[in-house]
View 1 (tube, protein in one colour):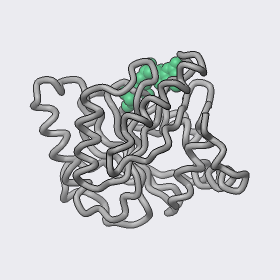
View 2: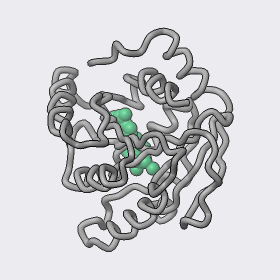
View 3: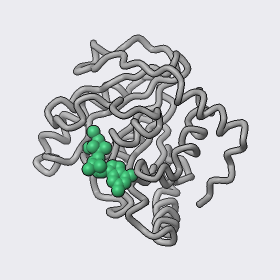
View 4: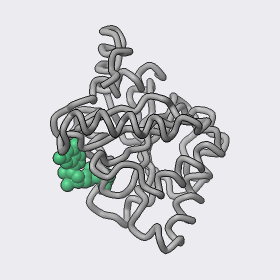
Amino acid sequence: MAEDPYNRELLEKGRVVFCGLCEFELGAVSIDTLPTEGPPEIAFAGRSNVGKSSLLNALTGRKNLARASTTPGRTREINFFNLADRLRLVDLPGFGYAWAARKEAKRWAGLTRDYLKGRSSLKRVCLLVDARHGLKEIDGEVMTLLDQSAVNYQIVLTKTDKMKPTEVARLAEDIAAAIKRRPAAHPLVLATSSETGEGIAELRAELAALA
Ligand SMILES: Nc1nc2c(ncn2[C@@H]2O[C@H](COP(=O)(O)OP(=O)(O)O)[C@@H](O)[C@H]2O)c(=O)[nH]1
Ligand SMILES: [Mg+2]
């Protein structure tokens, strides 16, 4: 994996930022309940069941940071977590359950577009992709939305422990090639496993650099 760009100093900063104080701030259900802009924000998006709650827990070293992870109905809100005012982690609603019916797609895009629009403190969206499944059409639609909103985003592969390292490396390369021409995509695809901890320190370092 291309994980060399993270030197010891940045890895240490990542550990300090993510493993210190972390507080749930609020769950926003509409544009007018979003918190006032403050620390740099990192948002996490992905299809339902992609491993988003597990990744947030792994990043922050908590057992149950992400609230109500097992209650699909509650995950429609945008949850904000504050890392000692150095970063805010933003848990976006998962997408996928009823996306095909378009109704959910509209609602997700509506709330999320509201959030993305003119949110100057939003520094990056981590778009989580299950390593076993690769990029899906839905991911493409979300990337297009992010490209149009000029919001920087990075693909983070999840559940890499379920695959061989060579397969993960090939997938990361394929995805990097596929998103090359997307204007707001970060070129580096990160591989993670919340199960084994692979790539977690690197992701912390990558994001702590934005703090
Ligand atoms: N093997 C493996 N399973 C994982 C990993 N991350 C999440 N899972 C499993 O995938 C399922 C969905 O995870 P969850 O974090 O709730 O996904 P979410 O819906 O995106 O929040 C659960 O059964 C997790 O145990 C991982 O890194 N490796
Ligand atoms: Mg969840």
